[in-house]
Length: 217
Image (tube, rainbow, N blue to C red; front, side):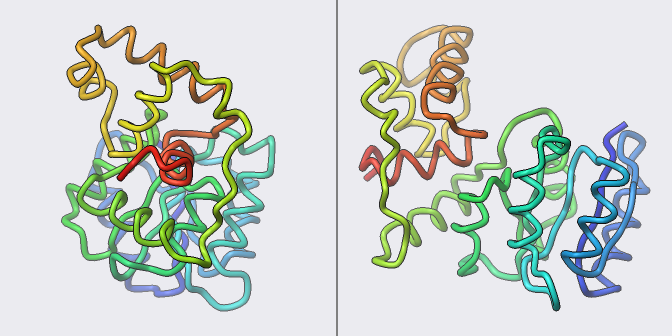
């Protein structure tokens, strides 16, 4: 059973998500909160698998709460999906850098949100080529965006750099295997080794590193 905490300052949003979660046999609502500070209390108590969290909230916002969550070793297995009201949210890039597993648009189809929850609960990042890649590319290219490159890039083999570039394009492991004409198991191995060398928390951070390294056009 996937345990979920919903964090949003709008009661109607929380109610809608509660109804959606309760309709699925493999999902369970473990708690709710209306701001970042309350979210930390709930999350540290129940240690959910997935958090659906808004960014813009009164008091402690979702980004500040996210940073505390990803910095807490006791919550290492908890994944955060950021909820945003429109696609080009100014905070999305910072959220992904801070360790968010991905993000969803609040008016996405319910099936997309359920897929997102199950995807991140399984240990993957939600990297939709149609939305996430465009957002990261937009903000990575701005002068105000972080530009520092990971010093571990030099440790990657040529093949691992190719894999990192494909991750930056939003490719999953199966697509990487197809593009490079290698087995799926080999693709997984390259992804895993690159992630370890880069010290990346997940694929979302690898996407950011790929853009900052100029591996994605």
